[in-house]
Image (cartoon, rainbow, N blue to C red; front, top):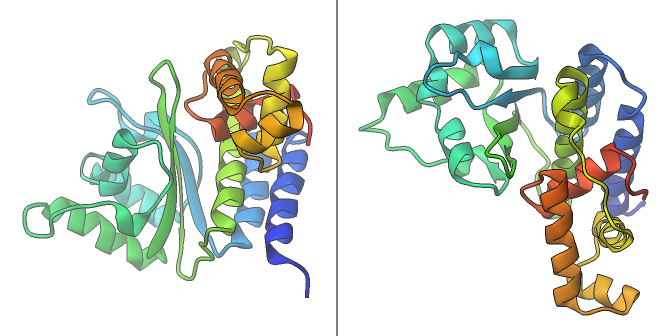
Length: 245
């Protein structure tokens, strides 16, 4: 039997490689839908988090949602009471939908949005908040009935989702994606080993530098790439071919 952890990593990098050949939003949606289905996901959306003056429709980048649910969600303005969206604004950590808190008695709107979603086979989900250093807020939220979420699958899903977001933004918002600064050789090396799953300590041993120095290079790379964390920096570096795996 093949090692499933290896399979997950292989699928993630195969997906990343395929995205570079896609030039339209429809192609990205189809590719992401196919890859996420391997983990049990049936629906997903890549969206910004709207300000009070913006509507939900204005900030959606890509979606693979049931038509009826999108119509209901926008008509009822559920984005204002959705506990998933609220948690996205307050964390950079990927989370399962069940981890998004709300009070069933004091927040009837939150109860309604979560319960009505189940009518469209959106019972369980996984969400990746995306926060840029400039304050850009977005998320990739995905859902289904029977999900394969574990300590082995989540890192692969995380990287795939971040890369899909960067590719979608590159296609839909090219002016934003063009603002990428050049990385130093050490910054590229540390991100390369991060993409390979190495910790800062592991990378330090490989490169013959201290763990603290590795961390400093990664922080600098994050700053140049406008990334809020290491995973987002890796996704951007791969997207712009600054590193290879």
